Length: 268
Image 1 (spheres, rainbow, N blue to C red):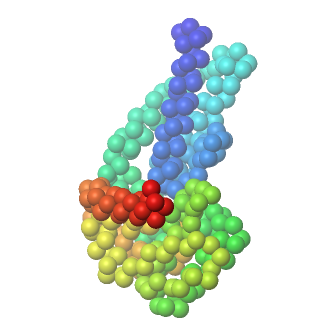
Image 2 (cartoon, one colour; image 1 turned 45 degrees about the horizontal axis):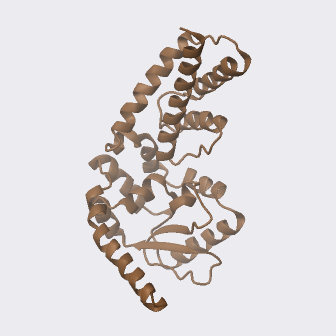
Image 3 (tube, helix red, strand yellow; image 1 turned 60 degrees about the vertical axis):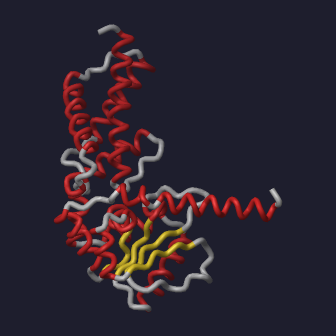
């Protein structure tokens, strides 16, 4: 293989492996940001959490170093064993991503642990992903929800996935009555669902209920969220894309009505 082709091959192999890591990590709610080291760490974390059967962190670090060696130092990387391992990794992860409609296969290990202990790691994750002010707001939401008899509370949305932006609010899913949060110093969005309705929404393919259990941080659970995880695994449930598509007509009509109203008020 010529030097140029070897450089291209090393680059392609590294970035393909890294892209696969990001794809699986995002579906598992694990942060990778835009640093090579964090992506390798994410691969190791997914192995530790049971998302992946093998730890591909060392492989990503080896490929990253090989990329640096051949492009910046002009060295010939020794990658005979790495070619085979990388090929096996990419084939395996490609199968996982293609089977994204099979949640028990793709996210089963992570969901499976929630059957036994749904809120342990999640509380730690919520603590890390929030600022001090956000943690105080979350504590208030949990306290007020429990005071109204809630049987479960989860932090959801971009905060739970460590993907906040400047316009992100704080999203929560409460199994029970919706608490009053009008006095809290942030944009707070709470979806309140009765326990029996929560199970029905999972069976109907509701995406918000699914994402709460797959990517949310469960802060308190007296049983309904644990039962929901068990239901997802046993019935092999997945969000219904057609259900979401069917709701677009009403949403677009509402958006057009709002735009028309705004134009009328401005005399356009």
